[in-house]
Amino acid sequence: MKNKYVFTGILLAVITAISAAVIHFVTITEEPHEEREGTLEVVTSFYPMYIAAENVIGDIPGVQLTNMTGPQTGCLHDYQLSPEDMQTLSGADVFIINGGGIESFLDTVLKNYPGLPVITASDGISMLEMKTFGAGHEEDGHEGHDHGDENPHVWMDVSKYMQEVDNIAGGLASLDPVHAEQYRQNAEAYRKKLEPLRVEASKITGKTGQANIIIFHDSFAYFADACGLQVAEVIEIEEDNTLSAGQLAHLMQVIKEKEVQLLFVEKQYSTKVAEAVAKESGAKVYILDSLVTGDGDPDSYIRGMEENLAVLREAL
Image (cartoon, rainbow, N blue to C red; front, side, top):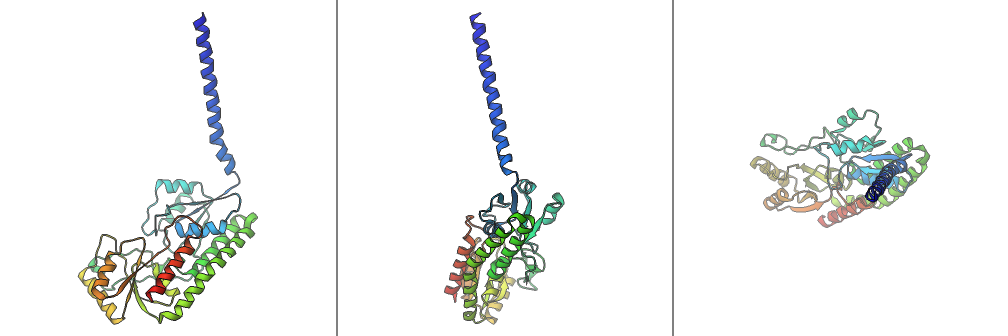
């Protein structure tokens, strides 16, 4: 009989413990949902858009910002959406993109989430035309990144990036009118921090003397344009590939005819091809940041552009 009471006591204790655990589990799983009520879930496509949105949103309460891709993903080029990306977008109230065709997966997103509002940061911004390396030498096996006829990397021109910041602020203000003035004030404060970069680029323009350069990523076309440099060639080659004999001969001809002395390569990729061209031609290689990766710090764009301008001053 004594054992029976002991067993019953133990059984009641176990049931009580399980009930408490279930209640606790329900509580901790429901709390985040309650905290999210009334929030605006903002998702950006990739790093440059994330940093712009981060500065526009600032510390506005009730706005949650998430970057769909990782901070080290880089330029989206041929990016394929993952199940995790689709999961992130499923909870979004708005999707901020750069536009210009760089988010080649946008049709898939809109097909799966037809009601998702999209803010296109590059709306109304004049884009440069895409250049094809070695026209007439495509048969040599070169394959660039196809964004269409326009070059979408507008964030590499500080003036155009400032326009993107304004477009993001305007889009968020329309979706969240309660905080509209705060978005605009944050955007204005960020523009003031960007202004010295724009001024510095304009000062460099007067010193470049319309110098011809070769760039190893099409994003640098905007940086060059803002600084008064002329792009003689844009070379886009996958890391494991090399220039064919025909491409190299064409490039040597361009370098000679246009007196190219500067080659600009992307920080995020190998400099192997550029170093080979430099060895053949005597031109010098300089490394720039396309500002598509970083640590998430709100000032990372500013720091990266300051470094790019410092590299350009050294090159000139």
